[in-house]
Length: 192
Image 1 (spheres, rainbow, N blue to C red):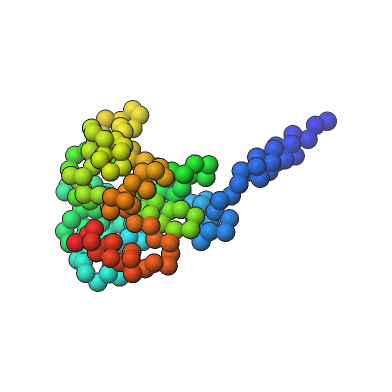
Image 2 (cartoon, rainbow, N blue to C red):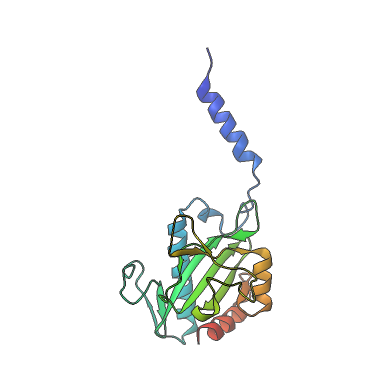
C-alpha cells in the first residue's frame, strides 16, 4: 500500500528547497509570508513615519478609513497633497517590483513606490502630471498598463533597469538602511 501523504510532503519539501531564499539573511525575511495587503499597510505606515520624522510637513494618514473618500483614492496627505503609496517586494526569481491599481482619473497628487530589496528600499516619488497612462514615461521608459478585465486600474511595474533610470532622473532614491541623511534630503525635496 502506498503512502501518498509522505510522498506529498516530500515533493513539497523538495520544491521549496529548490528555490533559493534571497531573503534568508535580510531584515525583511519575516515579512515574506505576509499578505500583500499587510505589506502595503506597512509601506504606508513606513512612509508616514519617515515623513513625520522630517518635522517639515503637515501629515494625515487615516489607514483604511478613507478608502471611499469623495476627494480621491489615496493613502495619506502631505501638506494637503494626496499621496498614493504602492509597496512591493522584489520578486524572488526576477529583479522587479509589481504595482497595481493606479487610477487614471486625478484621484491622487503624488504616487510613492516603496520597492523593497534584500538589503534596502528604493523610494520613488512621481507627481500625477509626470505619469502617463497612454505614453511612455520619459525617464522610466515604460507605460502604465491596464489590468486585465479592468477599465480603470493600471499597473506600473518597475524593473531593475527602470529603477536605475529613476535614480539617474532624480525620481528614485536607494536607501541602504544606513544613509539616513540622504533619504531625509530626498523626502524633503520630493514632498515639498
